[in-house]
Length: 89
Image 1 (spheres, one colour):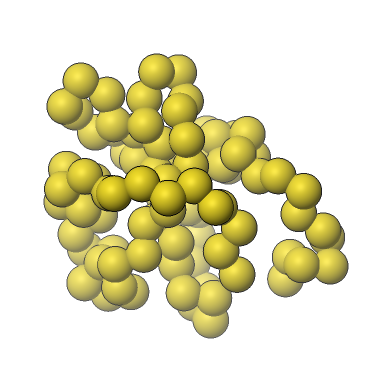
Image 2 (cartoon, one colour):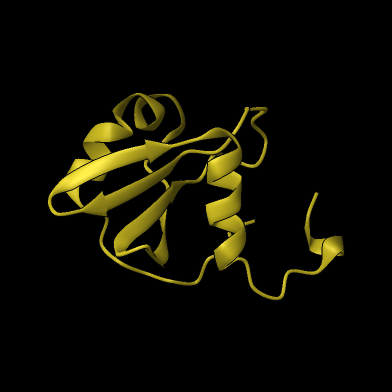
């Protein structure tokens, strides 16, 4: 289930940073919103995949920073809105 309704074209710099994931799982990147002046994107793994931490990409001033582990969870949590626990598997 994709819970982020924000739609924005994903810049090529993010697609380049997520290249290996895109090759393995497909081109599914969600725009989260603004985080500390950067555009935040999250790679969306297929629902049936078993993966570790999510990947968040922060784009600012033409550069991309990749965030994972606990900091990625923190950033994503800032953008989650009105999700019922019954909706989360």
